Length: 130
Image (cartoon, rainbow, N blue to C red):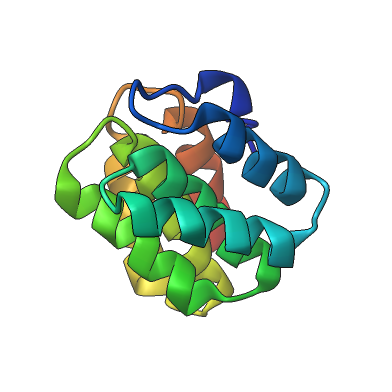
């Protein structure tokens, strides 16, 4: 259920090279170094949804689901372009933390909404409902 977003990342006032370095660390599972890069970028400008998304994914990789949930919730609250992705990964975090009712609610919404996560959400719902 993972999608590599590194090719989609672009923001005019973002240090793209720095973000790519963080993404590369994340993809190579070097979560500690990735976290340092993402934290540095967020200190410069906390309104970077691309960095928040990757930071959330990195937290998931580290098993820090509570931190990931906070980051994905921030993205959703900010009403930006990464809401579908944030909802998807938030749902996965809820499954990992045993919050099945919350996960079910998110995947139910996604399964009824056109988009790249519709069919995946339907499959997860089938597994949750077993």
